[in-house]
Picture 1 (cartoon, rainbow, N blue to C red):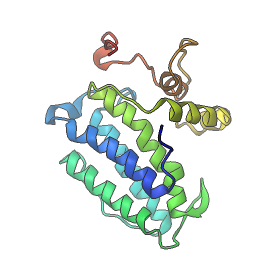
Picture 2 (picture 1 turned 135 degrees about the horizontal axis):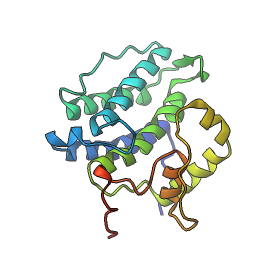
Picture 3 (picture 1 turned 60 degrees about the vertical axis):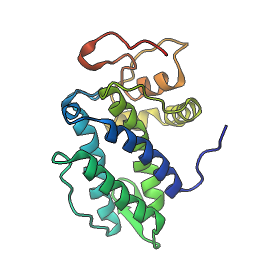
Length: 197
């Protein structure tokens, strides 16, 4: 088993690459498919990641131009990944100031608040596109332990919905997604769960 990437730049490169594979696999008609996030389509998942993080980086004095995700989701996502990766590859001592998170080195802020969002939303996009998501058993287990230790803070933030009940023997991934308010059994159109294997 390989160890987790050791730097913010490497972690982003790896998580963004997996998300990019999903984005590139979508056909034009896939972008209007529903996602597990209530009221969101597959396109909305990508737009969310692009738009909030570009605004967030303004707290470090980094002004990235707006991208028209709806016009070309694949091109916009790839440009966004390149822009964020460039900041991580050369943080240049910049500090990101945000009223909710305080002051942090920009690479640490991206790592703490954005990269994990890409990782979690890859589940949403994979499900919307009818793919089989795999966030990694060990990483899901570790993330769930971290989140559970500050559950009330997370719930109060409004970023996650109420936990969804799952069986005691549910996989670490299913338990994590249920914890953040996703239904692990969700399928587009409310169909039956896809078969394993």
